[in-house]
Length: 289
Image (cartoon, rainbow, N blue to C red):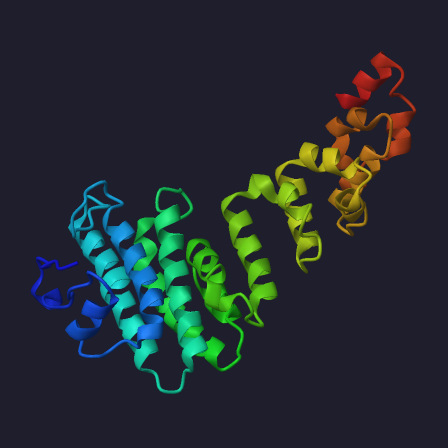
């Protein structure tokens, strides 16, 4: 995968990548035969990366900005090549350890390749991605949590990193998934309650429900009326506004309270006062105005 970059700073950074053995000779190290397959898997994903632009060549043209294209190539070709070399030459890693992190590199590239057209995964994450992988690998090798890496990066980077094969048993996976959920819901707030259905154990569930109530009280009303764990979680929320919605959802006349929801939450009117007039259209209208 030879390519000459149109920038002097990057000249000579990319070597032949036709397969793992030729890569080994081009950078001056030999790959153990038992690991050739795993290096080949990484190389295969790099070749897929080079074809994402629809052209079967050695170039990356995913952006109209050539600087962005060079950054992607520098990160996911040169950067991944360097990571392969570091893993292969590391005398402190046994065979299984080297295979583990090579599989992680394959996962990293797959994550980028499979998501590059999705809105939540901008192509510009390439450099952050390889840096996060290297930092995560350093922590993982010490048995430490990769949670800080997930916390400090974007949702896209964190999502790909957490799904890398090599980090699946990391002690920070559980907390990292909670962090990713929050990052995702920051991007897609309308999906908060739907996502919470299967993630009620996250420590910030109550704050998410409170935010959802302010944003879309009708949606929270609908979920609060359900006799399921999420409905129960909403009904037990300590926030005054959420409690008001929950009370409404438990009433047969819940929708009649909606015009007064803010006043009910502030204590400026009571449910009893509304109940006293709700069956009389004229008096109900008078209370509204």
